[in-house]
Length: 163
Image 1 (cartoon, rainbow, N blue to C red):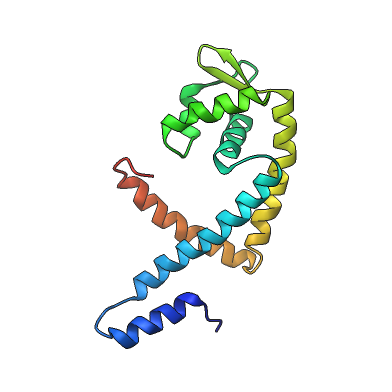
Image 2 (tube, rainbow, N blue to C red; image 1 turned 120 degrees about the vertical axis):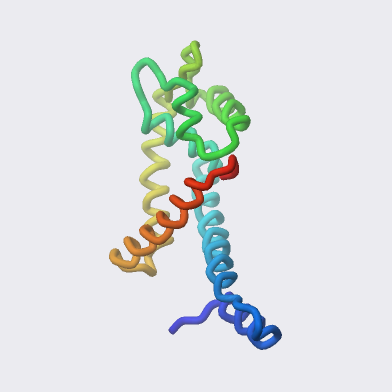
């Protein structure tokens, strides 16, 4: 079985404090370290495209919710996975770059330039995600998705305003 940096940490704690059950901390530490690697890879790719993670999230949300008469800000907020106060800044930044158009009445849509950017960014992002999951088989990916879904569903059900 492969070993990682968390195995060494857990082994160290078991030597020093055999009375503590550090197994849960091992899982949580691995999730955090995997996320750190993923965040770096995703931000690096998006940076090459002139985007950040939050800006890409707006771009993707507008592309997914796209309608000729624009997307109401309320729907955009529902799709936004970050603090609501930051959405306006992101949308205005994209508007100043000609990527998003404010239609008035709290409605937004992608410009042609924004759609072109999405068409370049989305496939690159998906290829990158596939690369990040390459060590896992299709079956393992499904298992992992199911386990993470179970955790996230519980956290969301207990939501107290935190992400």
